[in-house]
Amino acid sequence: MADLEGNISAKQYFVDTPQVTPGFHVKGAGNLDFGMKHRLGRIFRSDGRTVMLAFDHGYFQGPTSGLERIDLNIVPLADDVDALMATRGVIRSLIPPAIDKALVLRASGGPSILKELSDERLAMTIDDVVRIDAAAAAVQVFIGGENETQSVHNLTQLVDAGLGVGVPVMGVTAVGRELTRDARYLGLATRIIAELGAQLVKTYYCETDFEQVTSACPVPIIMAGGQKLPTIDALMMASRAIQSGASGVDMGRNIFQRVAPSAMITAVNAVVHENMSAADAHALYRELSDGATD
Image (cartoon, rainbow, N blue to C red; front, side):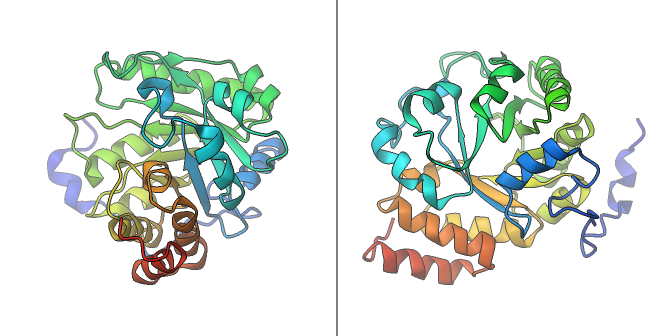
């Protein structure tokens, strides 16, 4: 093993020195071709950050609470985020083509919540990603999972296909119940995904040393929202992730399961794009939601 246990503490992440990307505002994308940059520029604003709304949960969970009627619960929120993460079935059947937002397509799938979730395969071709005019395709990667090799193969297949047509790939770290969400694991998973060619990575936040995770990853890390938290906790998590080097957030349940989802999006945008503190963003949420305490 190249990285012996005793050498872990000697690592230098240089967290106070941001990675420089000459000629482009998206981390690690300076050497990509025009198509890749153009699509990434639809996901990330000029500040290099993004607020993504995830509502792809149905591909393995079915009609999750808050997603029973996407046409009523999600479509009205679309104009207030930078990107939408969904499946091709939902995009085609429910999202109005006039909505000019970056689309990130869930491209992997397989088992439902009734089965072992790590046994996924690619669920769509890159040709269909292009037909839908998506800005990126997303694939789940189960580092440390039972079907780790298959999920890595899914990633590399999609990356190869994406390079051929100028479509970025987002690798999504899947953390099972048996895996610890700490900086060591997340650093391992995100670095592997980036090393294998993904142009952006979605992962969970950890309270300790998250800045090491983002510093060691050469492409943008987008924080996954995860399960619904109290509003102040969700905003605090987003704020800490951004201040620790994340390039944005991809929230689902922490937005669409709120009493006032639109107010939450406004608060999250303030945290991500304006560096507003979590406390001030929470006050903004309460003001816009008529004092909601969820």
